[in-house]
Image 1: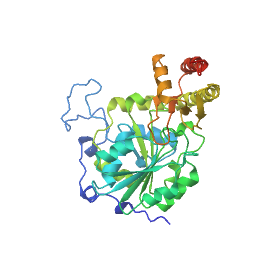
Image 2 (image 1 turned 90 degrees about the vertical axis):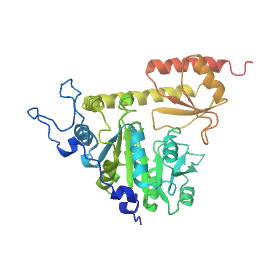
Image 3 (image 1 turned 90 degrees about the horizontal axis):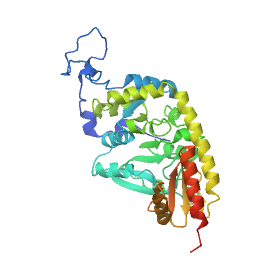
Image 4 (image 1 turned 135 degrees about the vertical axis):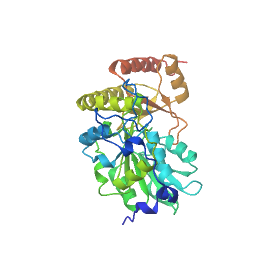
Length: 355
């Protein structure tokens, strides 16, 4: 049975520190009749002369309604990268602790571990189905293992991690299990968010960069127990989400039906693209995808990548990733963009074996 206790993994200096208190932390009520002379702001109104809400309450309220999740268990970051970095800084002791992540997976886990002087241990996925090797993961766990990272649907493989596998990891591990759900909106499986109340060691991260279409504003989201969110709020920068980002997020999230419709179109286009790829002679394998991209194995990834670049089509060459030799990752575009890609692939396919 899981014996997780957050007090056992918070860094002692974080537990002891006093959080910075900003002007808007000390006085939160906003009233146009008030005269604000507390934050050393420029008094001349240009719409952005005041500091933004440090806790992004209006954004969280909308997210809470969409996701059916309590606002006090939501943390927002300047992209998911800031959210992940905060987790490292709150719970991992530099030059002492380690984390484990499946591989291949999102490259920033390793970067952030190195940045924070945390040992990074990779556990290769099963090559047959790109699912976690649970025995291998727990062979790598020791007394200093603080976190396990599971990207689901995974990047770059595209497959969602089976629920039973995640459940076993969550139940067996007494540290934090971070489930990165950047692509969950494209999957048939439901989010792990609603399981947080039953599993206090689970952290779910999501983003507005994919399905919501707001990669340009850099807004990452963390869902966790209130105890975990309280710790992270203690160490986050006071005004980490600027006012323009908050306003744009509110604008788009307030009409969430458009997001749902766009997501459905992307999934439809993915199906079209997958079918077309089966007719390309140099495509050796099309991996199942629960995301907005498709991973394919080709005869020569470097050659095919360069050929597409010459034709003005930019994809990702993942051939250097673990288990991904000669693999290319294709993001699903618009119908017009996908049509152009398919046309060029068919043209290149005709010439295979001609010379």
